Image (cartoon, rainbow, N blue to C red):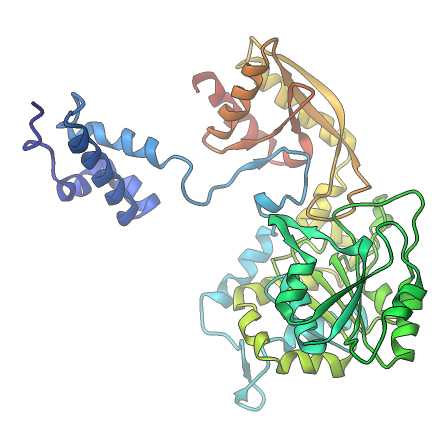
Amino acid sequence: MADFRNLPSIDRLLRSAGLKTLLETHGTALVKHELRDLQQAWRAAGALPDWAQDMAAYPPVIESRLSGQGYRSVFNLTGTIIHTNLGRALLSREILDEVAPLVTRPMNLEYDLASGKRGDRDKIVEDRLKLLTGAEAATVVNNGAAALLLVLNTLALHDEVPVSRGELIEIGGSFRLPDIMERSGCHLQEVGTTNRTHLRDYQAAISEKTGLLLKVHPSNYHISGFTHSPSVRDLAELAHTNDLPLCVDLGSGTLVDLAKWGLPHEPTPQEVLAQGADLVTFSGDKLLGAIQAGIILGRTSFIEQLKRNPLKRALRPDKLTLTLLDRTLALYEDPDTLKDKIPLLRTLTTTMATLEARAARVEAALQGTLAEFHIEICDCASQIGSGSLPDAPIASCAVTISHESTNEVRQLLCRLRELPTPVIGRIHQDKVWLDMRGADVTEELTTNLASLATS
């Protein structure tokens, strides 16, 4: 019969020196929960492990139980650069350091220093966006889907909104455009077909019940072949002829022409507005390379309506989002240094020579720890990800790891995730692929991979 009377108490364990680091890392409540859960499981089973009364034995057990919990840094070697599950666009450490004094002290978030009265929290970022894009006005919410939700709820509540069937997208997490439209209070009116929608389809759909015209950039997929879609300019002319606004949702927006660095061209908000759109929405944490935010640019009359909608308060961004976004946008004022200062652009423009040098170092590190595996360097293609340019992969370089047993390959992928800093790769053609575009801190990566020898 197990003797539970001599088990160390939870409070005594929490005061022990061995658990100090775990308490600092995970918090008292979580460690306490794990200790209690552990001892309750023993009582339910009516049996104790032989180390149960040894206080020094608890820390490694609790550390193992907490492994993988909490937010952690990882190496994104998946080949998807803007990875929704891995935090999307990376933020600049310099910008984080720059805004730290702002967000750790009182600041003029919604305070007009000139008048001494309440101000507009969007104004500073709005002025920056107007300067960069030439838009009449701008506003910011907490993400891209929220931007579209706010536009639809404000300008088309209870009204019909024609959308091409080829643009009824599903975004990450199974969120679908029709669902967002339904929640916004407007009524989706499908027009055209999946591959071909004409201006006349929109014309036929317009009635006194129509609230606005919506064009959605199908940024997370690509339809090619026998296709047609009206231009923004033609849709704008049709909308204005019928006294309707046109909103274009770009999904992933960039303020510069990526083609200048040899990357595929992506429509910019400036181009869309110049073609006649009244409003354009896009995300902050994709091609812009900033924090998660939903940005709306367009005509002053419409932006003012959005700001008066009670939903705007519910969807508004906080001080950290606004300050990080403002400082990132400030970098766009100097296009010549942009690619060196925005982490995303730096990753996208990394040369093949640099990628191959990284691969050589990673290959050498793995050869010393995975002797039973076959390791080689291969050319590959990275995808930008998060609904950005799905039909335009960019050349990259990868280290591949294979084994005669496919089960060993799958197990290796798990072992990589269990490293001190998890390494996230992918399996393709029965090999683990580690794409070097995410290996910019190569020395840290190779040191981390050395832990495979003991895992």
